[in-house]
Length: 292
Image (cartoon, rainbow, N blue to C red):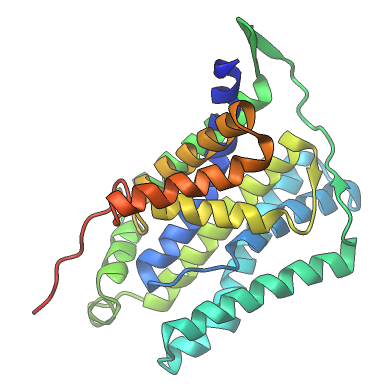
């Protein structure tokens, strides 16, 4: 029984980790919590569903277009809701409120088009599974976990081993100095939003396949859990977001199985609070040095 819950937790936790990466990347560069990210995750799932059912496209083409369109949506959110505020040097709380407004807009926009009821997501990859004692590991779970791990490791490589990644790290450290060094800071910020939103689309589509349902409110709680995962691992630290997402996923599935399904979210957030009381910077975060 516990093995089955660990398998389920690792599967859903890996999708939380993908969404958490979007939070931590934006925070690392702008020191801003992008509360519209959960709605972007939901929009990506609905775009894939629309292309599958309304446009009757092949799944893999629908998936690829959804990733591209959701990534562009991330850029549009930055250019419309955040870039004007940066130009005016507005307080960060203003940008934070702007992202909340974008989140509400996206939720209502999706409900205007598709309605507020839950939609069935077609089961595309029904590949069966393998038995591990009393537990069952489906090939879909293996695919979801492997895709998430591959994307997370690939992004880690890009950030740490490429020129674009070096520019992203420089911008996160000091945007003004990076601009003086010839880095196009606005382009790097747009790229960050594109990558984070594209990963959220991947997570949304895979969760839609996993549960075979999507709904306009699916992004709210996932967004909160992904933000909690980013904070738990250490906000602004990519490996921390990965670790935090998997921990949150495993904790909530174990809580649902052995405590009560209604308390799964409460227990996950309670453990987050306890960890942050003991280690405020998160599991992999580091205390920022004070400048004098």
